[in-house]
Image (cartoon, rainbow, N blue to C red; front, top):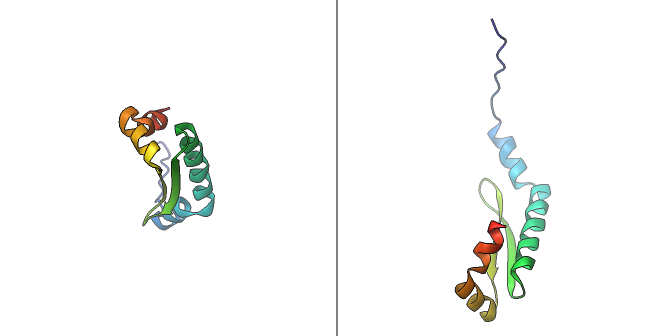
Amino acid sequence: MPNILKFELNRNGVRELLQSSEIQAIIKQHASAKASQAGSGYAYDVKVGKSRAYANIYAETEEAKKDNFANNTLEKVIRL
């Protein structure tokens, strides 16, 4: 009879990990790189939600908004 390993996921521990400052730093690094790839006028912010940290990358200036509208810049950068 094979030995079966069973474990129970500690949801609170996973939530703590996904909201931790270490994960926020990793997310900030990736968001910063993607905003830089998009060009000038693009910005990002890192926030902590109920279950995890996340980043928003967005066109901040009018020129960047026009560029994103015309060329789908953010979509292209994020797919890379």
